[in-house]
Length: 354
Ligand SMILES: Nc1ncnc2c1ncn2[C@@H]1O[C@H](COP(=O)(O)OP(=O)(O)OP(=O)(O)O)[C@@H](O)[C@H]1O
Ligand SMILES: [Mg+2]
Image (cartoon, rainbow, N blue to C red; front, top):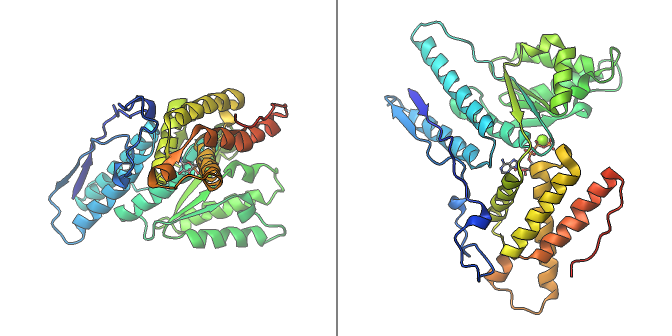
């Protein structure tokens, strides 16, 4: 069986402002949100099936296609997506070469993910775990997400025990270690080093049904790999997660609102765009990316709920869908800018929306 996938790199995405809508209308969305119509970045991928009439193979192809559909729905991440297609293609081809008694490369899928918070690392790791399950590389395809505190213990023997427990939980799936660089932060005597050794042993002991992903900020991860030279060769996949652009953050907001059956008005989109510009300007590369957008989206839904409860209007579907500019303004100013102020320790006056 061969699964060929071609990726449309020139994916045209609709910017919410660019939708051809009646400018006199307040809401640019259709009221009945079609869940299947969520924004997809690359729609023109075809999946070509060749041969493979044996039982289960059709299901396998459908399973892989379903995961790729989910991956395509993610906004941006062009290079990450290309890398996932390459990994899938390479793994399939090596399997066929093996069947043909040709030389083949063993499948090693351990990976390093480098990127700022909220850049999509956990989301992509979860989808990759699912993909590997569909490809038959992993038996369960679940993700176990841990950080230093879950692996490193407080007394001799405790670290090995904690780390082994998490490896066991992850067997058949992916163990995702967030901020992995912190494992080598404490110097020679720190138990973090022991956790690294146990993880490396786990990679060898369970190499047929266990994938390890180490994630963290770009600079720190590069430093971590330099100070642990034995690690680099064990992780053939290095994936960079760039910060989202302003336009991508707007599209992520669009994606999140649609998935929750909400719809901002045009003035609300303008308010959101203004806020994102300010967040990017004030926080540079630690702006929280898609995570901040999710916080804004969820906070604006709560703001809307309070606004509607106070109003005397009849709550029909149109009103229930609508997020207005006050919802965005209050969500951003109460939750996001306050956090930015704290982290920048500078005072920016917070005023209620007029
Ligand atoms: N490209 C994307 N398209 C749509 N939603 C996204 C995208 N990237 C991230 N998200 C959403 O943003 C939120 C944060 O993403 P995620 O948790 O994957 O980031 P992360 O890099 O793991 O962050 P952290 O380092 O803080 O753990 C999630 O709700 C996720 O679904
Ligand atoms: Mg994460």
